[in-house]
Length: 576
Image (cartoon, rainbow, N blue to C red; front, side, top):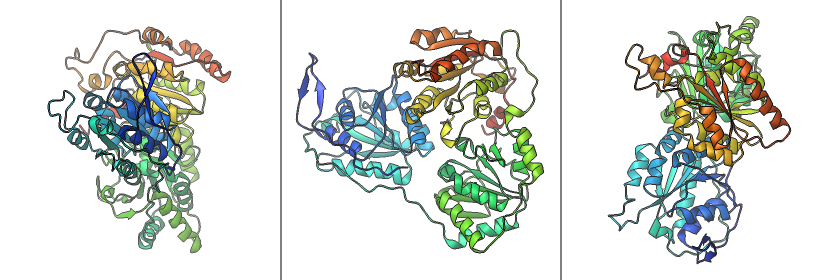
């Protein structure tokens, strides 16, 4: 996370009058809220503007903060979540009071579960107006989904209140909701000079004894495996260097996918998305070290990837995370990058030679041949009018530019884009699935694209999730994003179809929808794909991006053949 610094000044706000002529007025608390957030260096803001957050949103914009108007508050919240994950800056969501906040709650819940350090700026009903149609217990709602509820109390405290919220978001890696009652927001306030605050996420250095114990476990191991999670995403080089010195294979949880791209001893994603080779090599470890990784049921396949005699260690800055999902032999409280660097430095000081460990030529050959799902031979299940989702995804992997940022919605399909689409690094994959909600994909892709405009954004989504969030396709079209939306269309909520087997499926199956035509109605390019040969239109679209043409979004309505339930689905439902 970059350190917020003073970056802008602003004058008193203005809002349009009824005839379109700006009406000037004295600064208010709402103006100061937006101004201070801008001064503290927050990144981009997303939202839906209503009367309650109009002034605060314009104050943000006047302070130099970019703003994207979403079509739904839920989309705005997920955009800010994805933006924060991919940019390293604090994203902001701007919401109306009451219904604006409730509309955004699933996105806020996902961010809170993922410990995304973003700020939700929401209006609130006046404390004295107990009969307001907008009145709900916003504090209880926010804390109920795991976010932190903060409040601006008045003109005399507004600067301190906003700084406190941003500091909590950054230093504690929390999603913070700042409530500003509309009567408080309208109160007069003096605009301060540029606000600065020294806000840096603390980096916890591990104690020497813990590092020494970790090194002893590594020295005793013959087949160590490192699994990096969300907390290890900023420590890739350090973890990789220690792994090379100690003979460890490296893998990631889903959210850290891409962290070790290019490493010949990288196994890819550990857990439900693992190939058979990856799962076998992880399960064969005699030592597993989680680096900022929960080692939960998803990453360890409900413990099946941990052998009976395997030693487990965990490195994390959060003491509550250590041992939360399974017993560990050693818990190291420390920043992943510092811990790995200190361990490597201690080995070098002792002149400990590099260990072969698990990094044998035979293992390297197995990883190269079959650790990636796209390299595993399969029987093509395509029919005359339905394409095998694996064949589809592999073909797209070859057609789309390598410099991409892949976002994933939830559903039976989700393993295919997660494992068959390569990504250049950990900043090329955005996985907003801690809450397992479908319908977050479009918002995720737009937020990720805003954070990384240098990469082609790609979204993998199902027909259910896409139609649930389709209002945000207009946002992508309006922004002229070169977004590739791959809709794995089985005309169903596929996870439920495959999970419940022979039950009555009329509640989760639907008539076929011409999604390509709907996309064209929004102003996107829409194509229907039933076979690999139909992907020629994708090649034409890609060619347009290379010439700098204003191509806008491409929606691929892929009519997929049934896979009988994807390989990862059984693992997922085993925990339900």
